[in-house]
Image (cartoon, rainbow over all chains, first blue to last red; front, top):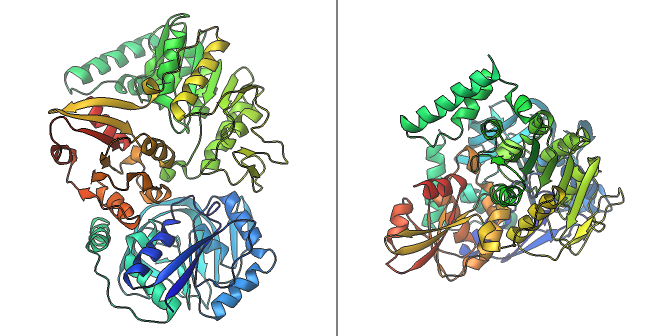
Length: 234
Length: 373
């Protein structure tokens, strides 16, 4: 596959915490690998495209999170996502987006059913978890950095695996693990945006989306930036 | 402790801090006063006409404009520049005057409204900013609305092209709503009043719950942030019988001219996606220095740099510095703009020669260090 379709879901709702940059970094890294990309913004009223290779969801405020959930439950959208997962598409969901694709979460003081794509339940914490976060990815085996800003705690069910082990920060609220992963579905609390801070993760998602292995990219600035953040966050 | 004695000690602390510690001494007196006399704001506000100015961007310059309007009507005190927490308010109120024009932080506004019982509250705008502290834009807007509902004696004036401002004004017993013909809002996808997807037609919104910018009390022509803020200041001044000031955009921009060994620099405050976007429009020259920090008032997270489109910098010479210079360098890199990275501002400015003109877009803390240097 030499073309990748990146679908940015509800950016007007799920774009409050800077996560829209994940799409730009994917497209930028893809260029180094000789892959052409398209970024399609899907808004609240649009149906989800059926042919996406990477679907992205970002962080949001409570009211916006509920609207995004409602839109994703509308029409064929959930079926489209489930079919995308079956054919191997990648999903990266951050913070409110991570909660949306789980089984249950809380927003505006009430519990709602999520999309059930990841076997996790989120509940409100007793305080807001805000600050720099450093983790070590269970999938990649190396360190990741980001910034977290959330009230939710997330509990993993039996079929989900933690996305990363927390070195500094709160992650899922227990300061032990961050996010969840199941096949090509990735959920995390890490903003930054996560792919800007950790471009190697962008490469992994591209590999997962295409099923191909790519040669290592030489981008000194990306490396310098990622390495520096890993060093300064103790 | 008696209020008068507390003020005396607070003022003494301020002048000591100036003379011995060589600090600006602007926030110390207010801090000391509130420690010695927690009810000071409530007491000192009694019998005075208080005007509060709040919003994400433009507080300092709009407060200044309003002071110049109100000063024609009577004696005025105002907050020390940029000092907009409760201590700044307390410091301002220590001097006797008929009027007080106070710049108030968005999250501190509720407390100041409750204690100072202002005659008027001007709400400029509300957009994403320092989310590590504000958490959600909606959270701030809700606080404003609750305060507005509980202050029937105060008139709330605001730019309702911003739905968050409209939400607060709709909760007030007395309000003066102003529109500049509508404009897109980065965080305006959800109705702050009822939580449904907000329907926008071009630059205007109309929600079934009634929240809209299409029926303002006063309608003005559209224009830049400085013009809008001057217009809002004039509207507030008029309520008190003040004469309008000339709307000079330049004087209301948060920018300063400086000379660095013959290099002319225009310094401009940039602290969130909205103020960055406004500042990028003002870049006319080909040489730009960008300074990004991440101290508490700058916002300790830099993710929001990805909310800004930097296309206007393409083809220009861009030098980045500051504690988070690398963050902006990488953000620009992904947008196809290669910046030079300097270790600090001195190194960045030294790359230019005498007679050259450079735009400096600076984070909150960097801007204040530069203008106070």
